[in-house]
Every structure is written in structure tokens, then in C-alpha cells.
Image (cartoon, rainbow, N blue to C red; front, side, top):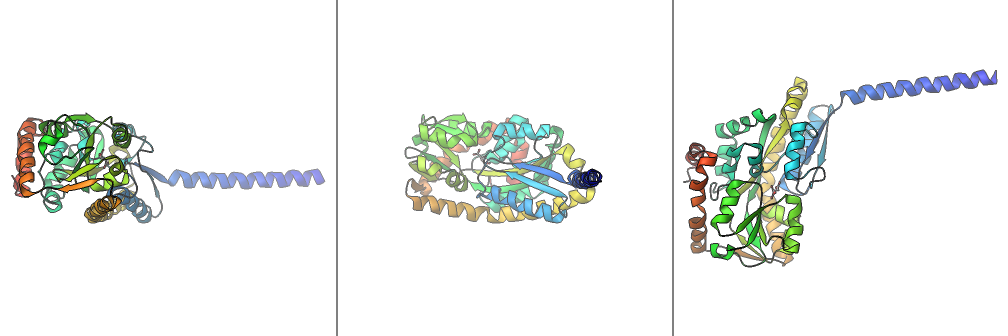
Length: 337
Ligand code: LMR
């Protein structure tokens, strides 16, 4: 009798366990996971934008979507993350616009042209208008859907020697992102450009593998690059921003209501990220000045003119690669030539 009761109790427990695991299985089957991988610190415009999207996406899809954000190249470095997205190993990224060349979308390098955008406002005329939409559309052929443009900011130059005039760059090894325009930019200054993944820059600067680099202050500060760079010039010579992208197949196969929720979340996260970018960069620059490890130089008008003269020829040099037409259309939009 006792054995029978024990057996029955065991059966009951088994049934309960089965029921629980079946309903857990059903719940799991319903949950859609978006792995959002990026290479910068959480405490940056992109890192904060990604977190905002996570929060809103989960809210607007009523918990049907779970967003996992992996910052700081935890999952993939620059080049690998694009491959991982195309393979579907991650669903969402926000690579810098300077990193789409190797994918075959050279037009994105237009954003790297020196002195192309005088302000965030001028830039937004392009990114939020028809040209921006058209450019995101170029990604479809690569199995990628472009959702939005996110700002970081305007770049400063740093090195372990003063970089006040173009001549100061002669022979310096400068780390760049994988953009031919950036390569031409550094060459125009007489520097030796070296493409390197973002996650490797700090160590390369520390050990002298490269002498210097360019980045918006938020990236420089959050990677502690200022601790291993003695000099920096607030040159604002070029822009660095992002395209938020998803695996096209994944996106197209989402239930319509889920995609609508995610679109809403992305629109709001974009507004948020672009709303904080300037302030984040201003704060980072101040924090680096306060840290006192790097000497920051502001260009005089005359010095700036020397930079512009040295760097503007890059536009013409790169026109064939990017498309003279695209450059002209952007200039017409921003009113800057
Ligand atoms: C860089 O590699 O310098 C930047 O693209 C990093 C980033 O994503 O902001």
C-alpha cells in the first residue's frame, strides 16, 4: 500500500514537472530574442541608446521580445560583428558609418569626408531626409535592413606628440577605422594610417604600436585613451555616427504587431540617443581635461585653415569611390561646399 502511494506521489510529481516544463517551453517558444552587439562602452551615446531601445522594445511588445545588449566587443569585434549579423548569430548592431566599406557599401564613407558636416543640424538634414533613407536602402541587397541613424559626434585628433598643424602628423602611425576615406585623410596629413579594431586601440596606443588616433571625446574617454595620449587637438574635422541595422530575414519574419512595437521603440530610442550625443561628448571632453593627462589644443582660425587646406582635397580624391553625385546632393542639402 505504502509503495503504491509512494509510486502515485512520484507519478503526480512527474506529471507536474512535465506540465511545468511544457508551459515553460511554450513561453520560451513565444519569446523573441534580439542580440544587440556593439563595440563601445555602455556609458556612451550608442551604449545608452542601445539600453533605451532594450527597455522600450520590451515594453512596446508586451514582453514578447527580449533584447540582450552586449557592449564593449564582448561578443564580436568590428569586422566580425557584421559577419555575425549576416549569418544571423546576432540580430542587431549599430556599427559606425565608417565600417560599411568592407561590406561593399562604399557610399557610407561619405560621412567620413573631412569637414563635410559643420554641425549636427546639417547632418540631420541628410540622415533624416530622403538621402538617408536611400542610403539605408542600399543595405537590403546585403541581407541587412537599416533602421536608423544614431549620432556620436565630431572627432578630435590625439597622439603622443603635439598635433597642432598638419605637418605635425608627418610619419605618425595613426589608427583608423576600416574606411578608405579615413585612410586618404590620414595620408593627406602625411601620417601612416593603420586599420585596427576599436577594442585593440587602447593597448596599441599604450604600447606604441600606433602613435595616435581620432575619435569623438565620448569614445576616447570611456576607453581611457586619454591616459595613453599626451596631446589632443579639438579639430572637429570629421563626424562619427552609426547606422542601426538588423538581419533582414529576421526582421521580415517578425509578426507584424511585434515589428510595429519595435519600430516605435527604435524611433524613440533614436530621438533619445541623438538628443544626448552632444552633451555626452561635451561631458567626456571636460572629464578628460579635468583628468589632466592630456594637453588639449583649440585651433586658432589660422591653424584651422591649414587643416582645411590639407584635408579638403580628400573630397575630390574619393569622389569616384563614393559618387560625386552623392557628395554634391549632400552638399546641396547642408548648404556647405
Ligand atoms: C571606432 O572604431 O573608433 C568607432 O567606430 C567605435 C564606435 O563604434 O563608436
